[in-house]
Image: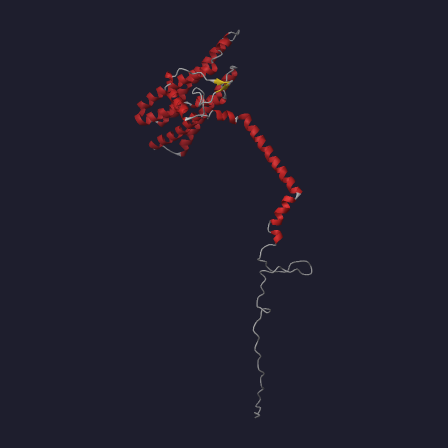
Length: 308
């Protein structure tokens, strides 16, 4: 039946939209796709999260590096420069310090250390002071108790610093600055003593087999007496300190004279045979005695402030 028109227009039925398919999505997945290039040879905007191409992941670059003749030449040149620099450093070190000779002074064992400490504290009972040789080469300290070493002076120096720190702590006077001053003062005294000995031997043209390491060893043996003196001062007071100072000073002087006598004074008879050379043996004797007498002064200077 036809309805009358009252001014209304019939509307068309809306068509339902088709469901989205795989070809029409809201956002395009560009995570695994490589950006396309436009006609001018530039990449279009977009992010590639899948990582660099296979030829940029290191495999091809490393292979190209090892197969490149220029890279190989540069690596060989750099290696040769490093070897030359190492040889130059070793050569410069050998000019001032022989590593093999330094190893000789640390070739010790427990038996040697115990016997050497007994000689340093009780040298009056020791009879044979001659240093033994094998084919013009002195025996190592572990083979000859009369040979000088650097192990005991080094360990005694470290022990002295630790003992000084303990003594200052007991007296409520400890501070890093005071301990550093104590260590530097002890080290400077050793350097001054060795330099004075070397200068004296050079000016007097004394030909002996004493090396710089020998002088450092003989100068460093005083730390054993210093440790004994400080310990006695801490345990028994000032009276024990002075008794230990007298004992260690006399023992060290006796040890230095008997040891240096085999190094400095063996050519007295040969020098006395020459004309005008009668003063040299006396000066050599004076050097030996002065070195021995100087030891108690240093011991007192470096230990008196630790015991109160």
